[in-house]
Length: 167
Image 1 (cartoon, rainbow, N blue to C red):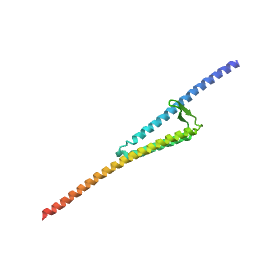
Image 2 (cartoon, rainbow, N blue to C red):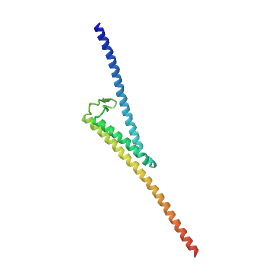
Image 3 (cartoon, one colour):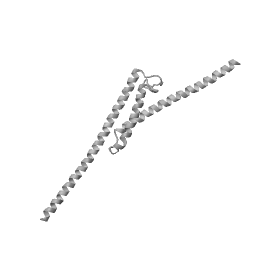
Image 4 (cartoon, rainbow, N blue to C red):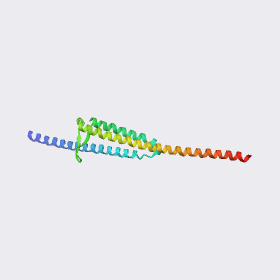
């Protein structure tokens, strides 16, 4: 009887352990998917930055900057091993790294190189957006200057034409 109870108890515990293992595995897959989707979303935002309309520069640039800074902090945490992350082993294989296990030196180097590449792209895209914005401002200032020149010439012509006809 004791053997039967122990057998049933062992089976119940193993079923719960398998269910818990499946849940843990599903959670890891969900975290990996969310992490990948977050990085994909940030990369899409970064590509939009270089095409930012100059008219919207000031209203949008702070939003981009804060999103990118949050991502950089997130990526630094991954590289330092502060929380679990996803490491690509081969082209198709994905390995989940436990929160308590830090990345090895090679993985850290790759992580920081990827972050450096991303930050370089961010700086370059910010430069392109800022250049486009400054060119936009410059064109507007030149238009205003041209209007002022034409107004001044028109005013001069009126004043001289009035004084010439009075004589």
